[in-house]
Image (spheres, rainbow, N blue to C red):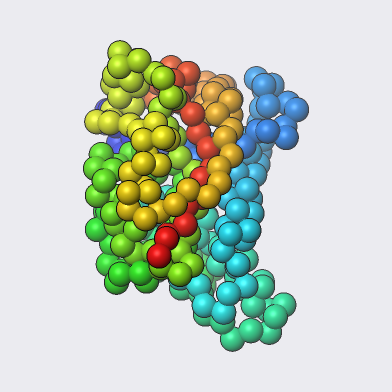
Length: 283
């Protein structure tokens, strides 16, 4: 099949095999900050996997810092959950804290992903490990939650793929709790000051209809009572990550469809930035 959009890649059998080898979703950009060998062109499968896990650890650190993971009752949703690693990490952290505190607390975690391939893998892993995460294979701009039902929304490189950003942000604001609702996510944005011509190049390369700068996203969010708290950027790692994936794909003789997809990201990366961001729902 042709790979013309981000969603197409998840339906490609060879990409599914590629992800299975990694054991994680390779579209979740790895964190190479502390890796002195990050630019080593011979990075192994394990190096790439570890970099993605490091980013997951950073995300969890921010979650624990802003939303006390020892709350007696946590409701969290992972939007664009992929194979569900982040949701499982949050669940494991809560259960560990619950055991230490001998608490009777409850943890309700949900996963939303539009890819049936991803949700199938996610369901299988959770079933085999007896992890009670509720998984939905559906569009998360129209969730099934009641107003203010969630106190943590988490996402990894997901929101940039959504064409109707206003609808997305209204839904995030609707479901987050007014008293202690946090949005903690990583995402890809257009660099500030990018020309209209270069922006169009990015849209054409990635098969997107639009892409926000962070400042534009922040304005949308704060108009909907989602107040910016903190961020950390690791934009250089965007290039490193896809370079490493491309080298690995070529070395292991994956098809031209896979290598072309990764090369497309490398071409777009010079106009993009990536970071981890925290917003809080205001009263």
